Length: 403
Ligand SMILES: Cc1cc2nc3c(=O)[nH]c(=O)nc-3n(C[C@H](O)[C@H](O)[C@H](O)COP(=O)(O)OP(=O)(O)OC[C@H]3O[C@@H](n4cnc5c(N)ncnc54)[C@H](O)[C@@H]3O)c2cc1C
Image 1 (tube, rainbow, N blue to C red):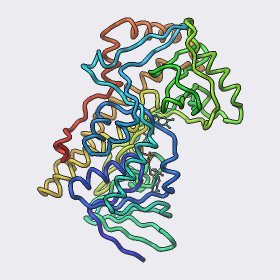
Image 2 (image 1 turned 30 degrees about the vertical axis):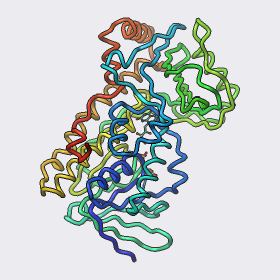
Image 3 (image 1 turned 120 degrees about the horizontal axis):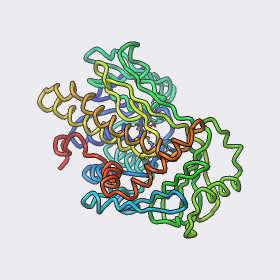
Image 4 (image 1 turned 45 degrees about the horizontal axis):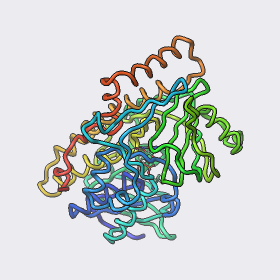
């Protein structure tokens, strides 16, 4: 048995856990990160790609933005397409110069793992049988096996950053959390293709056959999504069938269409809205997907993980520097306020842009009217733009120790 002591034990080396570890390091606070997957698996996992302005600013302020500045694609607008026409929404003009940046989650994670490695603080990959205990004591513990040896990490606080399927949230006794949940009757079939993006900006398409999204990862790689049934086997979709459907849904009357190329990755993701609150039990603090999930239409998940850990870092800094616990006590309320705004936006984007199997003509025409209003009203476009580039973080960077 190997026994370790740290200030903050972090379960999970996704965006939430790695960002928190780095924020704590910048404030001189020690942490141990425990991840059950391998380094390569964590880096290769293809997921988010759209970073809000605030997330970009946060990564830069933390000194981990070099890759982002080199390879990130800044987008000052996006397109909403319906009825065969694309309508541009000028995000920057409507928000006083803010934008989103396309930079793959795997690149963010790679940059953060490199930064963590430079700190020489512990990060265990391929940890097995991870569990947490003594959550309501002043010394909660993370237990795991690594390299055949049992490990026990005694902490002041544990951050549950282990995603939706992790062990931290289920370790909270029954009756403490209230869960709010909505499943959608569809999923997204996503592909990565070796094809130069035929649009410089994302294209969200509402089509009679279902939603489609055109996006990209780099000047050579396109990332595309199709609305499909939630449990659709990927085997039902040979590459040619995927391209046929993409082209039917996305081609516009002026002849714009995605460039076809070799598909290098494909998979189906179900869609869900989920919030578990409070995001705290004793000395366990949940952050990111371990506490909430949004459907990816609004591109908010990773961004919410970043805003959660900023709030947690502020609270832990005050705790260690001044012995103050008020911000730890407020942590859940402060995060949940922003989480619900992102939930509302993601639900609205999803329900406006997707076809529902049981919908009637009324709903179809309401959706078209919604899209017509959205693309013809400056007020409606401004509302979308300010939410898409990201609502303000709930706490300042300075309060979390960043200049
Ligand atoms: C198709 C798709 C597209 C998306 N697009 C966007 C987008 O454009 N913008 C956006 O902001 N978000 C997007 N998201 C959401 C985003 O990917 C997630 O919200 C984000 O990964 C959350 O980060 P996290 O660190 O909280 O959780 P995760 O990324 O899930 O990380 C949790 C980590 O904990 C580890 N773990 C799990 N269990 C254990 C255990 N028992 N012990 C130790 N470690 C454990 C996992 O291996 C993982 O590394 C998208 C998601 C999908 C699926």
